[in-house]
Amino acid sequence: MAQLQRGIVLVSRGFNVVAGAAVILMMVLTCADVVLRLLRQPITGTYEIVGFLGTVIVSFSLAFTSLEKGHIAVELLVEKLPRRMQVGIEAVTSLIGAALFSLITWQSLVYAMDIRQSGEVSVTLTMPIYPFIYGIAAGSGLLCLVLLSECLRSAVRTAKS
Image 1 (cartoon, helix red, strand yellow):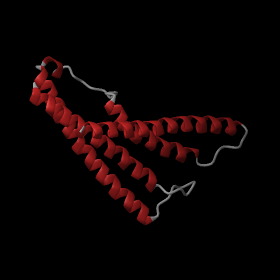
Image 2 (cartoon, helix red, strand yellow; image 1 turned 120 degrees about the horizontal axis):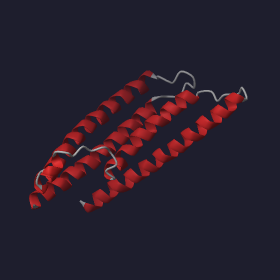
Image 3 (cartoon, one colour; image 1 turned 180 degrees about the horizontal axis):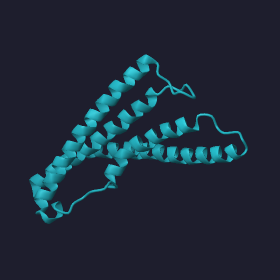
Image 4 (cartoon, one colour; image 1 turned 60 degrees about the horizontal axis):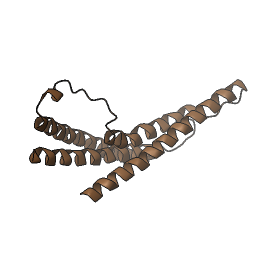
């Protein structure tokens, strides 16, 4: 189990590095486009590329953010409960989150296959859209694994306490 957890953490970090690189690329592209617009030479398709990079940033940073507990959590009521109940609630919410993101993963895969089969491309650059939807599925699937491992860890802590 520990080896699986280490693998999930390693892959999550790798995905997060890709998301960070996408942020840098988005920043450089946007700055270059602004400067080149002043010279009347804008970069064609900047809006599309920024949108695609946005999907990479969000979907590839989900799992690592969850591992680092970097998301917003409202614990006003839960923190007043006994520790065992807190851990139990954590297990249940992780399981519900895993179920939600498994559905998102599945539907993203179905949608990506449909888009790929139809040959749909972006308007300006005529770039295929489906790889980015597969990226959403990959990021969501990885988050699902993170949430399942957190659920198992919380369930074990609940049983021990």
